[in-house]
Image (cartoon, rainbow, N blue to C red; front, side):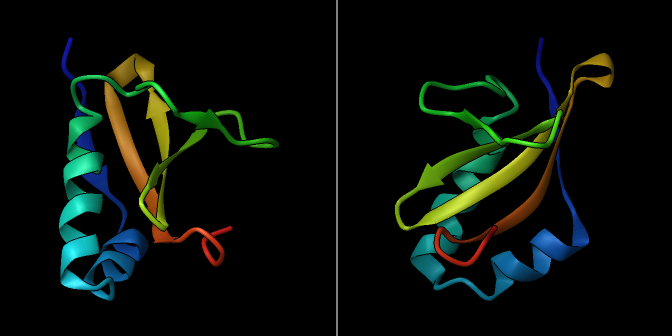
Length: 84
């Protein structure tokens, strides 16, 4: 089953502020989550039931998986040192 990917407003602003090449890679990785929301290398975040993170170069995409409605919600995108 294919999931729907949505990007939160806050994450959308963060994506707009990324360098063009990083922006493209982060968006490509985020939309690839529609086919497999738990790809190899994904990490579940501590202290958050629904949140996961993937690494995209020097950046992280943090997202929530809502299996009951087949939704992946991207909540943060940024440099891996600053995104937490």
